[in-house]
Length: 139
Image: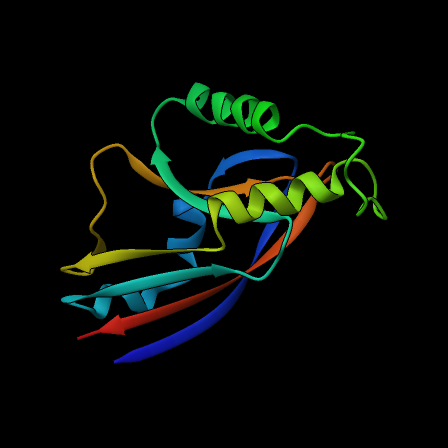
């Protein structure tokens, strides 16, 4: 079986946000699969996706601190600044972390580790609504 659906997430501020349950609520078809894959793709160049710690929110805060240290704003060598000082850094952060993740499905559930969750990594200031493409493959 193949199934694809586009969803829109709520308004998220800059930072790393756990969205596993948001995604699962919008794709009940996953429960029909005994074995398969869920591919999640974000249709934006200034936000990204990753898998990591789902229990302690300080991990998400530390991710935000680290990525801002790794890719600072207001560097004199940035020329793509049309939308503000967070514009080019957001594109770089998105490329470093990636635009998609693939998660195995077993017995109608995501086969994640005990402490794993799906993050939306919002790299722009302000609140943004992001679109995801969810693709299920399996039987």
